Length: 254
Image (cartoon, rainbow, N blue to C red):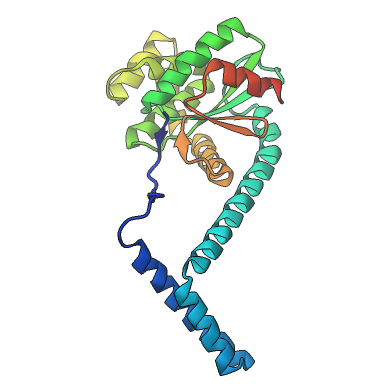
């Protein structure tokens, strides 16, 4: 399973306080109805009948709230699908974002990841093997450094290396790294891969790199991405648990 960002997850089960909670909701509903009745002149008998019915059947309120929540979820999903349809072609053809594989391919995976994420590293290995078997695929790499301060350090190094045509080398080395991400590590990777360290350091702090990271975060928020790694393929959003067959099937549906 992919590592999730911090989210508040509420259990779906019902505990011993459910009944009390249900009646509290019914009470709130009655108060709302009372205000409504005063405003619109409902007959007192009608209001009392409604009150009695709600207290005797509080599940009506629960069902109404659940229906409302279901409608909100469906609406949010529709909005997300529309955002994916609009954003995917833009992300897939964005030449300012580093990519792996065939540069002009129409079979594109947009990948959001973090160099401190173990599941991202596992997915990197999976996608690297896929590229060997399917060289017609393109992977657009969206750096999303959200797990730790060193995540941003690594993301900046990768984007800066891209300006020297060495993104693939920096990316692969950072994904293969098993220890802490440090300045020394980045310098060593740069030196081993013929990356100009002085220029790399300057570019890491550039406004261009900062803007790329801010744009990636804005896109992730707009698309409702809540975990990493996340892959966007057409109007489909896949988690880090997706296997090769699932990914290839998604590409075939573009």
